[in-house]
Length: 86
Length: 518
Image (cartoon, rainbow over all chains, first blue to last red; front, side, top):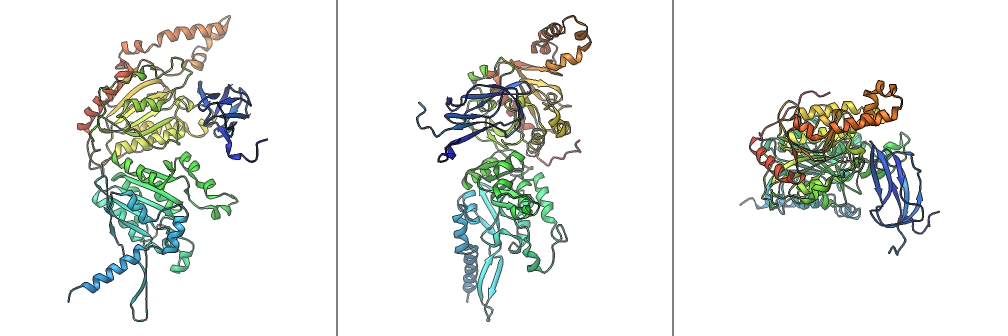
C-alpha cells in the first residue's frame, strides 16, 4: 500500500488522548497543509482538533466518526513525500 | 632541596587521571555521539571554573620497585564549579572507566559530592551514564562477596539522594544508557533531562529479556516512554541542550532553601497590555484554545520555561518571571480532556507545588478546569485519591498565590485553585464560567422528578437549562462577592506583576515541611 522506497515520508497521526471521534474533516487522497485540521475529537464535551504535523497527502483514515480511540492510537496516515504541494 | 619531585609526581598522576579510561575508550564514547564526563562538565559550567575533588583517586599499578606504572581514575568525577557566577557541585559518571559501574567508583566520591551540596547549601548537578555507580554482577567476583543493598556503610548515599531535595536544587542529566542506581539518581531530582538518544530503565534489555520481554533500549526506556511516564522531565536533542536546560532551571531558583529566588532586571514593561488576550478564549464553550501563547503574553517576554510537558498533559507547569521576579506557573491545557485533572496531572501538580513551596516561588495559576477526569479509566487510576493529594499539597503551601480564572472552574478539582484557609489573590476573566457541576448531565441528576413528570421531558430539560444559564452569569457571583473581581484580560499582566512585587517581601527563607497527605 505504501511506497516502499519512501517509508520515512509516511507520518502517523496519533491521538494524544482517549476520546471519541467527533468529525473527520478530510478524506483519503486529499492534500493538506501543515496545521490543517484533519479530525476533531471529543473529550470532556470539548472539541479537540487534530492537525496535520506537516504538509502532505492523506494516505489513509483509520477511524470512523463516533468511534472511541485510545491515547497513542493511529488516526490517519499522512504521506509527506509529495514534492509539489503548491 | 624543595618538593619539586613530589609536585611532578602529583602532576603525573593528575595527567593519568585526566586520560580517563584511555584513548580507545574515549574514542568509543565519541563514536557513540557522546561527550566524555570531563567534556560534559566543561560545557555545563562557567568556563574554567571547575575545582575537582579527589582527582587522583583510582586504581594504580606499580612495578617491582614500587614505582607507579599506571593510574586508572575512579569513574566518579566531582567537584565545585560556577554556573552563572553562582557556586554549585557537579558530579559525573565516567563511562570510559568500567562503563560507570561500581567496581571502579570508590563509593565515597559520589557520597561526598552529595554531602558537600548539603553542607555548603549548593545546588548539585548529577551527570549520569551507566549504572551511576551501581554494581554489576562482576562486582561479586571483584569483591568476593555479595553486596547487601542498604547494608552497613552503603545507605548514606540514599539518605542524601532524598534529603538534598529538601535543601538544595537537584538537577539530574541522563546522557546515554542509565540503569539501576543510575536511574534512581536520575529520578530523585527536582528536574531531570535526557537526550533523545538516551534510555533509562530499572534494568536493561538483557535482564528484561529474562522476564520474556524482547525490547531494545529505546523501546524499553527511551524518551517517549520516560517523559510520558513522568520519570524524566525533559528530552532534548543534544547534550549541549541538556546543559542549557540545567543552567536555565537553576537561574530561577535560590542556591538553597535558605535563600530567595534571584531577581533580574527585566526590560519588559510590567504595565504591558496584550490585545490578543481579549480574544484568546473562544465564545463557543466546546471550542479549545492554546494556553501557552496566553502564558507567554502574560509573563516577562521569553521567560517561560516549561517543565515536564509530556506528563500529566492537562496541566502545564513551568517557571517564569514577572517584572524580573521568578514565579511558578501552572495552567490548564484544554487540548487535554478540556483541562480536566487526570491522575497523572494530579501527581504533576503535587511535585510542582512542592518545588515552588520548597524554593519560595510565588504561584501563578491560570485556571481552566472542568473537574477531575471522569469515566471508568479515571476511576481505575484512582484519580480522586491523587486529586485530594494535590488539593492537600496546595493547601499545605505557604507561598503567595494568585489565580486567574481563565474559563472553567467546576467541581472539586475546580475548587482546588488556591490554598484553602488563607488569602490568595484571585481574578476572573470575562470568559470565566463556573459551577458545582456542569449543567450537561447535572440537570438530569438534580431535576429527575420534574423531567420525568413533564409531558415532553426533552422540552422540560431545555427549559430548565435555559433558566439556570441565565442565573449562572459570573456577574451574579461577583454581586454576591463569591468572587472578588472580574477583570479585562488585558489588565492581567499589570496585576500579576503587582502580585510578584507584593509577594517578594513576604517570601520567607528556610526549609519547608509537609504533613501527611491522603
